[in-house]
Amino acid sequence: MSVTELQHPLIEHKLSILRDKKTGTKEFRELIREISTVLCYEAMKDAKLESVEIETPIQKMKTHRLNEDNYAFVPILRAGLGMLEGIVSVIPNAKIGHIGMYRDEETYEPVNYFFKVPKGIEKKEVIILDPMLATGGSAIDAIELLKSKGVKKMKFLCIIAAKEGIKKVSEKYPDVQIYCGHIDEKLNANKYIVPGLGDAGDRIFGTK
Ligand code: PRP
Ligand code: URA
Image (cartoon, rainbow, N blue to C red):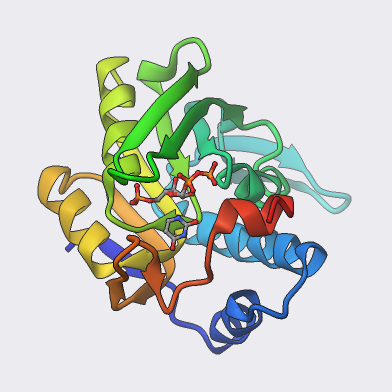
């Protein structure tokens, strides 16, 4: 399976606070931001750098830089917005797109209500952001929408991924690498991740 799970004691520590129902909005947001930054570092491990010549206070040197214009980050609204701050803290010039989607409460199928991506997206590597990969329906629809715009290279970053969602996405799009903080076992009858962290959007925005 094309999935990378962050396996680090500090991530496990942070996730234990994030998952805790006693954790409030402020801390929840901070943790989502922090873990997203680590996911971003992991997902950018294969980034191609460009050669540049600079001058340190000591001497000239040849070194390498990232062309941030080659990347676009696309949060799936609402919850994906919570991950954005952690991303732009390390890639401040990243171009940002938005995909609005919610899961229908009865069918659990995603409903798309907004789509706006940067010009020239088809030439960029696109990194999709959504804290929760549950059934995989929202991720698949987001990937399809981006493919229909000509995007060729995509990655998917999430905080928690359920095995079922990973299987569904990677069977359909084996070329889309998934990066997650943790892989959780299953979904409950309401298609929530178990043990999960509850409703990510509601916890980020304090709506319930
Ligand atoms: C959540 C989550 C994902 C989706 C995952 O969004 O942020 O987008 O569900 O579920 P899936 O893998 O089964 O499609 P939600 O529909 O709750 O919308 P919100 O972000 O506006 O709260
Ligand atoms: N969306 C969430 O916010 N949480 C889940 O567990 C599943 C979907």
